[in-house]
Image (tube, rainbow, N blue to C red; front, side, top):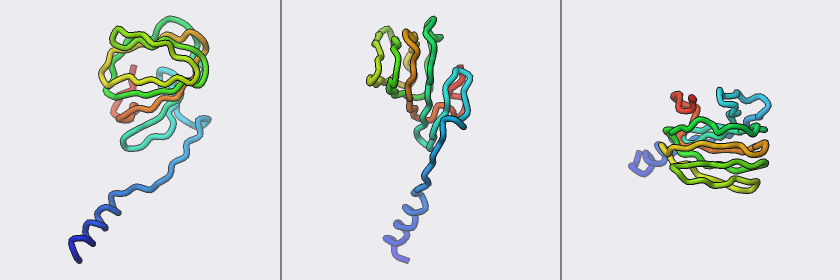
Length: 126
C-alpha cells in the first residue's frame, strides 16, 4: 500500500458517522433538574424545562464551557460579577471555570450545550 492509501484508511477509521436521535421524554434527568439530550465525544446538550422562579442557584465553577439559548421565561445570569438579563431568543456563554449563578425570574426553559460534555466524569455534579 502507498502512504496515501494508508492515510485515507486511517482517516476513514477515525471518522464517526453515527447519527444519534434522543427523545427528551425518554432522557435521563440530572440532580439539578436538567434533562440530558444528545451527547458526543466533545459536546453535549441538556434542557432546563419549566424551571420555577425563586432564590438564586448556588454559585458554581464548572470544568466545562456552556452556551445556551432561552426558549421561554426570564432569568438573571451572574458571571464573575457581571449580570445579564436572559429573555426568549437570547443566547449566552459561561466560560470554563468562571464563577456563575442564575436567578430565575419567570418560569424558564432553555437549551444548553457544554464542552466537554457536562455529564461525563462527574463534571455536572452540584
